[in-house]
Figure 1 (cartoon, rainbow, N blue to C red):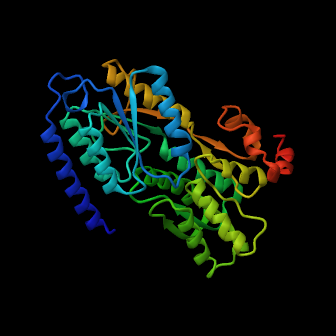
Figure 2: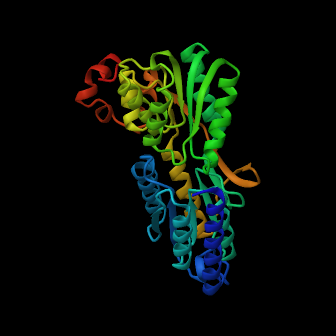
Figure 3: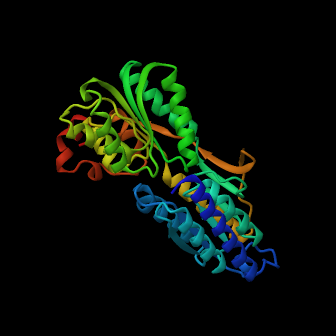
Length: 354
């Protein structure tokens, strides 16, 4: 869908959403519940399923923390499957069904501004989760520009700062992707690395990443690549698949992000150079704490300011083969048994993980 069509769909959805909310009426008693009820329903709206973190970590961690803090709260989970129009409809449904708080990780942050305005008109606060939304009540994420800087600097260090690289960024509709890209360029552009081709992946798809790299290898020799910047682990997997299909058995440094299990295994095996570990547990549990506080009318605690929105900003960590044990294993994100399946037993032993 082109920019203008997407904008039209988003605008139409906002009109429908606003009309539905108007029919429901406001929250006259000011308790923050949707539609004037005493609801303790918290709507968790996540953007897609291609990135494994959402179903495997964000959702269960969030739900568990809410249950721990508030046994009479209910989490209503909705996933938009990378469809901004679908997410608009899901938000409409959640609010009209009486959600007291929206925890929203937007497919399209610009379109999500309409969700925020409509929710707030019904006195339903919105927590922008992981991706920034202008005008949200709260925002929580990691220092995303710093993520890109760490990725870019890792690639510069691994390559010695010279040679040709490919660069694969995230979705243009994802504001985090722009921040990752800005941070990565700050490190890469200051080095001697030469970006042969750059790709903004519309939906973070590993398949798109593989196709892009395969097409580039029609013009350049894979063996001549100094490295590849991949903005996340899913794309890193697609990059490595393309390089392997081209006949490479030893890969140039490839970056990543999200500390997916497959990526950690690739790092241990020496196929992927690094990933960024963002403690999803920290982020998901803080989102749950804030959501429960809002439902109960309690103070959310100290915040910082990010573009005019009260925020909680967390620190990212670089993971390489040298510190897998001291990061994702030490935090209980994965166990050694999770990582060291029979296929990776020898690599784990060499990395001191067995």
